[in-house]
Length: 286
Image (cartoon, rainbow, N blue to C red; front, side):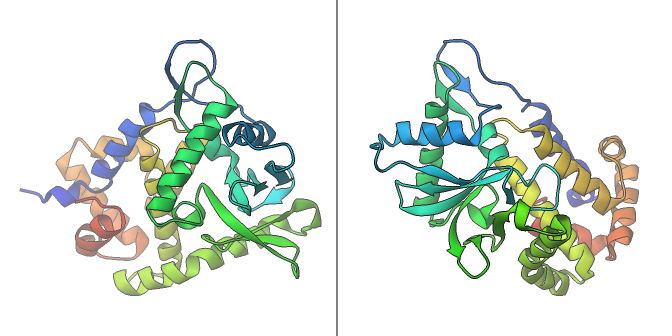
């Protein structure tokens, strides 16, 4: 009988597929109490919602420092829609992902920016109580930033990434890619050593691990098309298998076993190392 761990990405993606397929886009409309999201909210509307939710006086309101068309963080399409605000409630600068706030699910009678902002504050409070005082883990969704007067950028306390004005940047994609690599390189080096895989594979594993964790954490709410494309695109690139092929293998024990060997070979490790260490320790697939 084959080990349950030999289900490999069939098990991983089976769960992910259920999450992804059950969490479509939507929101807006209606006046009935229930769950809503704000899939088209702008950065400015979100900040207006924060000021309403915080009961901020006019002389002490949060405001936008850099809007989404002025800020670059990532080289990946769909991940560079970040904006930087001054958060008056905490008297600090903060970078926020537009995709993230558009995916937040909250309860109200209709879709509105104040309800969204109140839910964001609740999430933020939970993160603070959990020890994440500078944003969520790794700064994937939002994080506190500090202004660097030497470079003219805002630097994330969790991610270490710079948030800068796109107009002042040359070769934006190259620079962003370098920043992203630097942010991952320390953990990737540790993964490379611990799991006996090459550094490029380690970078891909770390990146995919973050995105899988982020996608699953959002499984209670709604996932954007960008979330799904980012996770599945990285997974297919890493494994050399299409999503369709993996789903087909998830129902055939022999195909699963063969896929374990193929993917292990693709990433430069053994099937046993993949089953016994990489999957359970990096992806929590038992």
